[in-house]
Length: 317
Image (cartoon, rainbow, N blue to C red):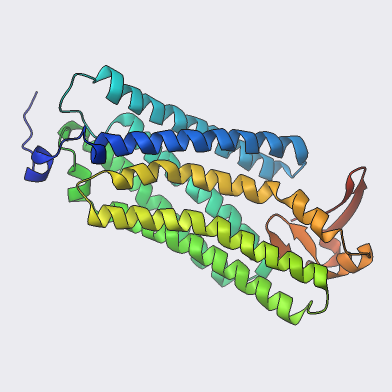
């Protein structure tokens, strides 16, 4: 085996320390807990909702990708702690870790694209939607490139910081961009909701209260992924030769998947809240609830169907 010279930072770093393998193990354990929550959310979604085939297929695809990512992270954890138990110079980069990075990129792009589509449906602002989609694709492309470069540099292990030292921008750029996309999505939705509330429905108490709840929910779901993405960038830039950022990255994909399912599963609560208005005709002419977004569609897009459990309003796009 060809000896690869190691940098002073790599030579002096103990990967089995708390800030090395310890942080990665904590991140993987946290992602496993979030995966359990995701399974519950997916079960509730398929049990309670009869959405379009495309939406149900999206949920199924995200679940499949998260299953693959969980399997890859468990494989990496098993290799570190069992197969390489007696190896004092464990590699930091493993095939399972690289697969996790690639799957995170795909899941994040799918979830961000879903919310961007909802923004376009709500606002009809093509320029804003294209801007957000471009930024989301930039994050996706950079993260996939990071995965490819990590795979190509596997032969350098146990040079722990090969990717960090050669391509630091492939870590900083995608996650900074992802944080920006999440923040812009939440900001755009809240802005348009606030403007619509101010201009269109100032006298309807129930509608106003519903919009406030939607704005709060939008901020919450967008804030979590945005804060974690920013935390990845900050910890990487301040502790490049540690693996705190890797622990946060292990959790990020599960947060995206859970935010998608949460936005879909909250709809019955929003429907019940909107149903407290006495007149269904007033509701039909005033607003509809679709996911975490309020829209005012043309009458042809609004379908009101009665079920045994109440009234459900749905937009067909």
